[in-house]
Length: 155
Image 1 (cartoon, rainbow, N blue to C red):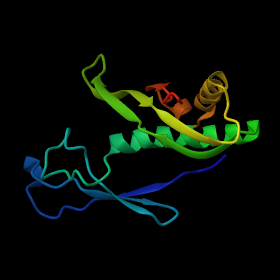
Image 2 (image 1 turned 180 degrees about the horizontal axis):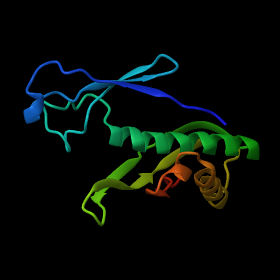
Image 3 (image 1 turned 90 degrees about the horizontal axis):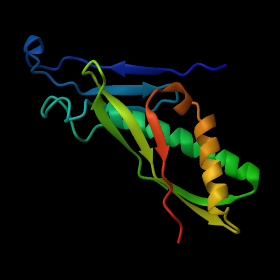
Image 4 (image 1 turned 135 degrees about the vertical axis):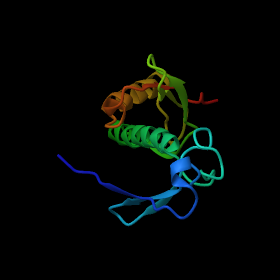
C-alpha cells in the first residue's frame, strides 16, 4: 500500500528536566516540507511548559478524523453527481478516562455543514453519504474512538 511519515523534533532549551520544569514545545515535520509548531495541550501540561498557540496531539487527532471524513465525503459526493461549493466542520473530541484510569479521546463528534451547487441531495441521501464516508475513511477505520457525524441541518 503506502507509507506515511512524520518527524518529531524536541530539544531541551533550558529549565529543569528532572523536575519536570521544561518546555514541551516541539516541531512536527512532514515529507512535503511542512513544519507545524506543536505542544501538549495546556489542559494536560500547564503553561509555560506548553504553548496554547501550537497544535496539540489531541487537536491533530480530531482534525485528522474530520479531514479524512471530509475528503471521503467529497469523493463520494462527486461520484454521485453532487457538486459541492463548500464544506465546513466544527469537530471536537472528548477526553475521558478508560477502565484503567488512563485518559483517552473516547469520542469525536463531526458537525459538517455542506453547501451544494445545483440540486442538493435529499437529507436521506446526504446522511447515506456521511455513513459511507465514515465506513470508508482510513482514519476512522484505524481507531477505537467512537466517531459520530451530526450534520448541520440545511434550512
